[in-house]
Length: 196
Image (cartoon, rainbow, N blue to C red):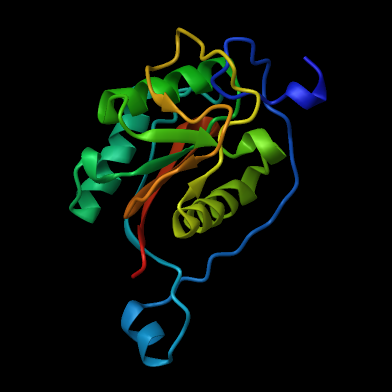
């Protein structure tokens, strides 16, 4: 595939990740402190989880990903149906996309809209968690969620999900979940609540 059609997360014709560049910073502050000083509050992290299966450097484990997402939900005191959008890790690798999408489908079914922002700027490695969480938070604030670029035909081996494809989607949601699943089976998931 040409660089214009790569990466293509979850697509049947995907051919791997593309390394990207980028940086982002999330400044986390105790809520009462931020309110007391009159800070602009963009969102609230209400749940998070991390785990590691260390099973294989490049063969992610669906079950461990699912556990990580479920633990973040549990910490937030939420159910899967409370989540209005999922920011997928979505690297466009064969095994990674299959494991992640199946883990997401097992937990959320096909009712939660999902997209991968790596389709826009590639895999920024250590920056991707902060960058994608910030972009997802901004999309939630605007009520406008970007589609996964280059996703035309979802891989039938991937989980059956509500992939945002082609056009951006207007979604009014109170909570989003942003996931990152790294080499070596390191998994992270955060849940952000829209600030109101």
